[in-house]
Amino acid sequence: MLGKLGLDSTQLAALISDKQAEEMEIELKLDAIETMLASGNLEKAFKEIKKAEKKEDYSKAVIAYLKGRYYIKNNDWKKAERNFNDSIRLQREVHHSEKPKKNLSASSFNELSIISYFENDLDQAIKYTDNGLEVFDENGERKHDKYILMSNKAIYLEKAGRIEESFNLVEDLWSYRSEINSIEVILSLYELRSILLRRKKQFDDAIHFAKEGIKIARLNNQYNRLFDLWSALGSAYLHSNELKCAKICFQTALTLEGKFKYRNVFIQTYTDLGILYVQEENWSEATKALNKAISLGRELNDARRLSLALIVLGDLFAKQDKKPEAISYYKEAIGIVQKHQLKKREHAALIRLAQCLQNTDQEAFATCAAHIVQLELELQDQKEEYYDEV
Image (cartoon, rainbow, N blue to C red; front, side):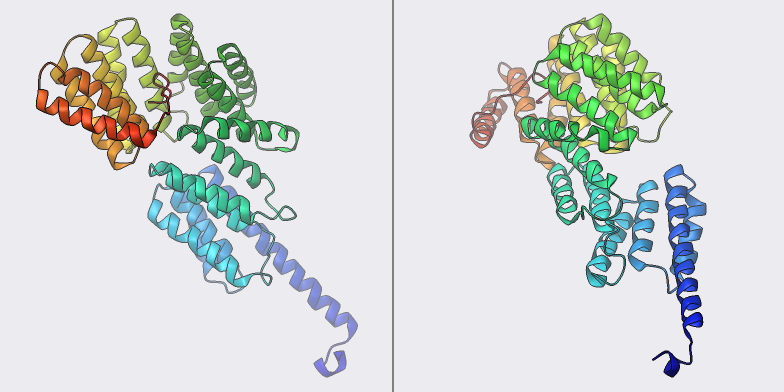
């Protein structure tokens, strides 16, 4: 056979060696591009992606994935979504022939879940994490992506109010802590445990895990997680009525503004600070904090966080018997939550609106009351928790 090809064994070995060296170089180049993307060197990364795209021996699925990563870093959700879907499709097409165990499809589904989360579609975000976990190859590469998918799913479940499901997933992940090599995932688990324990009214434990996470984040210079954990600690103190401690936590968290890219998280912290000031009846500081939350929520199109800030600002005016102002904010919140099918929050806003309308506009009150009854039938006997479930 070698004779027919005009090759001897030495020449064949040299060809194989050259091919392996070429594949190793390609693999290294693609890893280098992913590092550029992770470190924020986006334009250099994109130039390298475009160069690689012109070469036939580069994996099209990997190129599509890297382009998706570039676009998601630039907040261009549509182009990112298209490229991640292309990567998944290409992986299916090549099946066994082209690096089947890179777990690129699982990674792409994870990125698609993040896009859905930022587009206020929690149900779709959860579905994408399920898709990612379903195609994940336990014997393949990128093993850390499994834990990222699980962690993200737990976050989406908590945001969707599916507390027990989220808590059970966090408990499952907690048992794998020694295998998780991502400090961000580890710190996310500490934050989630704190949030979920607070929502289960286990305040001492919620405070404990937030404090432990803060220590780890501080040692590792994880500023975004430091922000999240200080905010979680503040919420635990707020809900246990330790207002002075809560204020210290929220103010500390807000000193980290500007340390990281995603500003959506500040909406919740300003809202929590507003709740704190409302409880203190410090109307001017509450208004300032809530207006900051609302301004950010509108700018960033964060329906869930924005609607809560609007409800809290409505409460602030209702407590001062300024009903027209309260009604205006409740109505704006209702418009947002109806668009995004946030039924529990819609119910909470409608109850507040009805209270304002009761003695001022009987016709509007009757319409509002009928809507509340319809929503209660849809929600059945699900109970709300003050602000957490709103």
